[in-house]
Amino acid sequence: MKRFYKDVAVVEEGGAFRVLLDGRTLKTQAKATLDLPTSALAEAVAQEWRDVGEDIDPTVMPLTRLSFAAIDGVKADRARVADLVLSFGGTDLLSYRADMPKELAERQAAAWDALLVWAAEQYGAKLRVTSGITHVDQPAAALAALRAAIDAQSDFALAALHTATTITGSLVLALALIDRRLTAEQAFAAATLDEAFQAEKWGMDHEAEQRLKRHAAELSGAEVFLRLLA
Image (cartoon, rainbow, N blue to C red; front, side, top):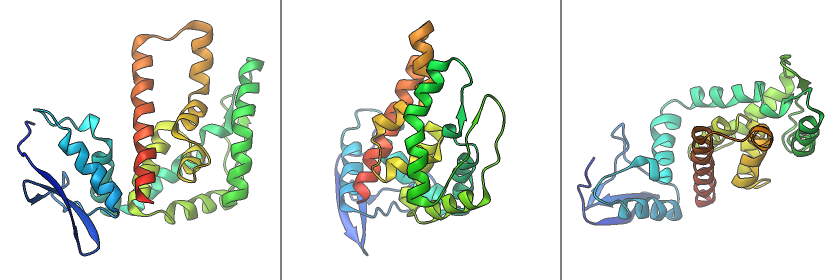
């Protein structure tokens, strides 16, 4: 889509912050008013729209995309999004370990064990661990604790949590990002530990490398988004 506006501004209305394009309120893709919860987020979203060149490219506007997702996705159907996020807790990446090689198993333990302990202490979610391809059912109490952590998030934080969980394959890593237990860089390194190990041994093809770079950028965008909500 071609850029159709010149001026970008931020106004406060009714306790929310709105972005104006040539004086008109910015709408989501579902045509809902984009009411943002903080001035900092509104200014950052506005800056993305100021930085647009001749064409509007949503792929380089992570804060706008997450804001749209919070309203069109989470606010419109919060229970569905919460269920999707919780499903990652039931199959959390950190619960599934390699049998072999020993070096990879040791790296996983070093990177992931402390995070599972943290999740148990912080949220009361004590997840089981398995190795190989064996499925492990997580305790109902742990899943209930994770659901409580999900339900405690605002619509905007839940949008970022959903993005972070999808990218990392781990609800524990996503919650650690929200709680500032990990940075986006640290969370992504933990999530892609296996890929990094394989790349050391066999190298990485260009397509896989580009995919990882895109995901790392998305996770960094989610981290910025979360900090702007504070």
